[in-house]
Length: 310
View 1 (tube, rainbow, N blue to C red):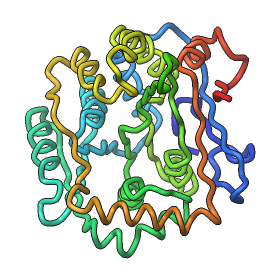
View 2: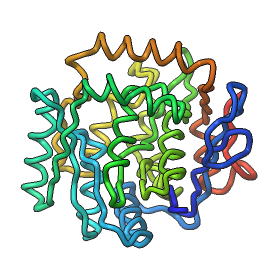
View 3: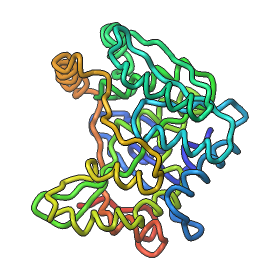
View 4: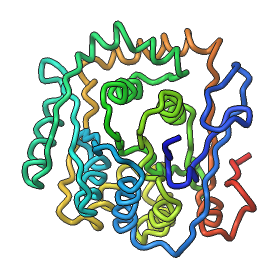
């Protein structure tokens, strides 16, 4: 089995079966992470180290999915800085639906001297003919994630996706912060494992050291202290400034998902998925308290896996 993360330290299970799919609507979902083996360097340095580790574990060419957003560019920058041979892949929808992403990907790759391959996908046709096949097969309630599954099915190389970023949230009316791990992202991992694909869809949790480096980042710590005063319930608006401090030449810009053209259709599809999948596929999620998770990653907190909030 190709390692999803280093030593498969990130591990999810349904009814105790690791990297599997649920067997019934009553199946129980669980997630755990490993602990660090050394003191982490900066988040930027840990991203570069992760890129090198991925390269060491595959004999295939490495393809980084470049979406036009900051996270995927950080992944590409990490491989570039690690001096690991790779190329970028960008999906192109018809009628210039995601032209903004295509233009930025082309500009970035040209400036960095990285080969860019553009993969055409008729997204509206995909929604009509293939979306529900992926969702019903893997228990995915998203209209976006099956697109990456489709890409994995059409790429024979080692595909790296900028997922797994720690989306820190604050409980409303509280100073407590948590990170939620859901079954949709786990389903993408399960699909790759079941199909024998070399896919790293959770780059930002590839090592415990990278996770801890992010949580120990000074700007992240400041967010945890000031989020209530700033009336922020999540890290989303604050995150670009965190990344800019680490990569000063990173151009902060709006990120579009390419589906703005059909938000009503997207909503209708999600409603249909909720109706048609609920009888067969459970929805699982686990919440980790940020401070508990930090102590666990340091190896000073929980005995084994990080525990979900009750």
